Amino acid sequence: PASGKVIIDRSSICYIGHKCDFHPDLTIMQNLEFLQTLFGLHIELSKIKDALKYFSLTKLANKKFIELSAGQKQRASLTRLLLTPRRI
Image (cartoon, rainbow, N blue to C red; front, side, top):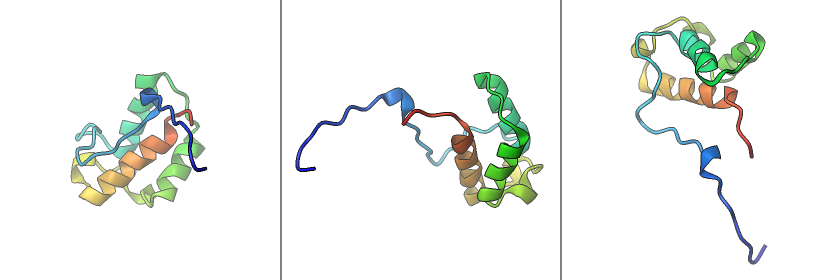
């Protein structure tokens, strides 16, 4: 389009910065389980496993977050983002 208007609902915008907000002493899987509790979600285990597989984190699912490389931490954050319901 040559012109138009965009309205942004800031509550639906997600940002992944350099600092990940996973608990460092929990594993990726434990952090994702905590996410469910925090937001009152029920995410099927198969969906969590699919998301971990998508970001090549299956083998690291039981590794503590603090032990991950920076790139692995970013992918874990993307996994969480993928599993969190968002309006588009």
